[in-house]
Structures are given as C-alpha cells and as structure tokens.
Amino acid sequence: MVCIETRPVCPANGQYTTRRSGTGLVVDPHRGLVLCSARLLPNPTSNISATFGAIQVNLTLAYMHPLYPVVFVKYDPAQLTAIIPDLGLLKPDNRLCVGDPVTLLAGTNSRLKQCAATVSGRQILTTTVCEYCLDQVYINTERIILSPTPDPMEYNIGVICVDDQVRGVLLSLPECLHSTYTVKYVGLDIGLILPALSQLRASDIVPNSVRVLDVEFSRLSLATARAFGVSAHRLQDILHSAPEARSIFKVCRILHIRPTDMVSLEIGDIVLQVDRRNVEHIDDIACFDCDLVQLTIIRQGRELDLSIPTTPFRGANTNHIVYWAGMYFQQPYHTVLQQATRPVSNVYVFTFTDGSPIAMESFHRRMFVSEISKHTIHTLDDVVRVAKLVRDPNLVEFNKRVASNEKMISGIIPGRDVVIRIVKLNGEDVLKSFRTNDQYFPAWQLRR
Image: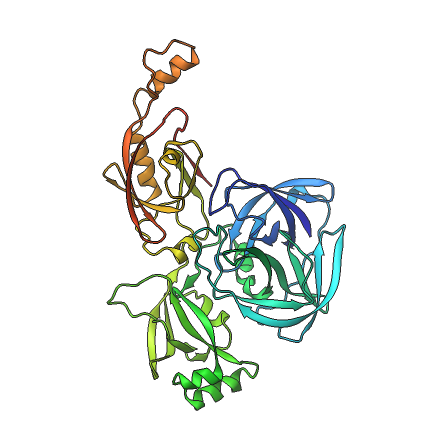
C-alpha cells in the first residue's frame, strides 16, 4: 500500500482542480501497476505522484475503469531500488458470499490497520438523477456490505482478505440524497477488475472494449417474478444452478433510445438467460466483450429469445479538453449520458471560468453545445476549428502594444460577437449571444 497524491490541471469529468491524497494498492510491481479508488483520481487531467517509503515517484494514468469505481495508475519500476512483493490475486470466479468472515486491511505499509468483519449483504448500486451531482454514477454493479461498517476511508482503498488471499477491495463513494451528501462503502469482488489488470499486464494500452446493453437493471424477487409470468420450471432451474439466488433482474430504465428498427430491451423485461446460461448475478449482464448477445427474456408474460446488440461504453477516459470563451469543453462522460434527456452532440461543457464572457450571460453549467455562430458542432475538433475562425485578427497587434506599454488608441478588447446554441441536461434548447474576450480568455486545448 502506497500514498498517492493527485493534482488536477483543469476541470474535467465533473471535477474541479481540488488536490487529493489517499492510498493505492500495488498489484504488479514488475510493470509498476497500482490500483486506487476512482474518488482519488476522478479528474483525468491530474498530475500524479506516489510515495514509496522515502522515495517519491511520478505516475501516469493507465486506465479508468468504465464500470467500476477503480483506476489503474503506473510508475516506472526502474525508479525504485527496493523490492516490492508481488500480490497474489485469486481467480475471477471467487465471489464473496453473505456470511463469509473476512479481514480488512487499510492504510499504508508503515501504518497498516487490520480489522475483522463479515459480509452482511450485497446490494446493487442505482442511478440517482441529479443535475447538481458531480461524481461518476455507477449502475449494474453489486457492492459488498461489511459488518461492522468500516472507519471512514475518504480517498483510500482497502483490501478484503480471506485466509491471507485478496478477495476484494473496499472503496468509498459519495451518495446523493439531494438534501444531504453522505458516503457509502462499496466492496468489489476482485474478479471484476482482473480482466482489466490482465490486459494491462499484456500491453501498455488497454482497448476500451467494454460493451453494455444500455439499460439499468433492478432486482426482482423470485416470488414477484412468478407473478410477472416467469414459469415455475424456470425458477426451479435458476435455484438449481444458483442455490443462493433469491432474485432475478428486470429492466428499470433505458439509458439511450435506439432506432425504432433495432431490436432492444424494454422497461419491464425480465432477463433469464444470456447465451443459454442462467443469469445468476448482475455481473452476468453488466458488460460484454461482443457486439451481439442472445437473451432469453420475459416480456408481458411471454418468454422470448432475442438477439440484442451491445454498445461500447462511452466516455470512460477523457483525454481531450478545449478551453474557449471561458468554457471547458470535453466529450460527455458516462454520468452525463446516463442523465441527459437529449445528448445532441459529442461536445459537453461542465463548467466555465467566473468573470468570463459566458459567465456574464448567466449561462447554465453542464450543457451540450450544438452550434456556434451558425457552425454545427459535433466534436471537439469542430470547437477548435470554430475558435480559430472567430478569433479577432487584431489580437496579435493588441498584445504587442500592451507588451510595449503603448497608449491604446481604442479601448475595445479583441473579441467577436458570437451566438451559441446549447441544450441542457433536461433537453431544453437555449440560444444566447455574447462577445468573446480573446485577450483575457484565450483559447487552448489539452491532450493526454
């Protein structure tokens, strides 16, 4: 366990430039891979450093997991002379069950805390749609609940062990209750993140190959499922394959509307099987590595076999930020796509600089941009192109005069009158005009 500090360069992914410090777990010392909480590194523009004893090294972001609240960062093993023991992880099929006694380890190697606990339950994380929540929302993920409740961990990561073997990790996540802002603890089976670790061990680049069904699932008790049309034979088959099963899964929310000619799941559908295998846990239907899955479902009391296309999980890693007219543009990350009523473009503004021209117009933070001065905006490259087109040609000469302290003949600050079309998360379309300020708020972009 090592100490990690993150220092964001600019706002991104719903996060401002707040420095954070916490702990990380070295999962592969030979390749310099460290696992840490997504709360420690929510902003992908961050500069990252870690302390190994008395040695501080720089790290780079290796992979932000799109489904689970964990992040992999990487250091150069050649920077360390000390030998870090390799961590033995279990196979992905080892799943913690209710009643299992576990040992929780948290802290750093110099101040490691250890306590005994018991797995007291498992609960699916659900979406809370709130335009003021800034943190990533995680769905179709089953958290492990421990008893007694662990001490506050903030941005640290804890290790859940059974018989000196790592079986899971413990993290903290903010929980939006609209009127209050609390923290709940999320225990994850280690098997959920091992596929990403395996890819990182094999290559420096992890392809964003996670694909989802674009729906949110909720639990449905077996007794209730019978009333929804699930046959007694199906329920017996599920109990035979998974004796601990007490529920199955129903579609409770559609995240993105598909074209009408495309086969898709509907609200109320009950998923029984994937590729002829019974759905025993939410992990069986949370993500896939293929373009098409065969599902057996119950829809309005009828059992159907459908071929459902999957979609790539968008917005997992933000690596391009554009700043113009005081606004921070980026691709919409997944939390935004979960909450947006009408995502009209691949360009999203999370926030803007106070005192900037856009702030003077009382603009709404968190919005999609579809048009700037009659130029259609689809991508961040479109924003860069338009920013160059509307840049005041007098800016260079103006800056030269300012630099040489010459008396200004005109008091007009270089800028252009522009009109911007935005769409709020609730789908409301807004058209506003303002004047840019190219001297105090020049355009720039960041790529990582």
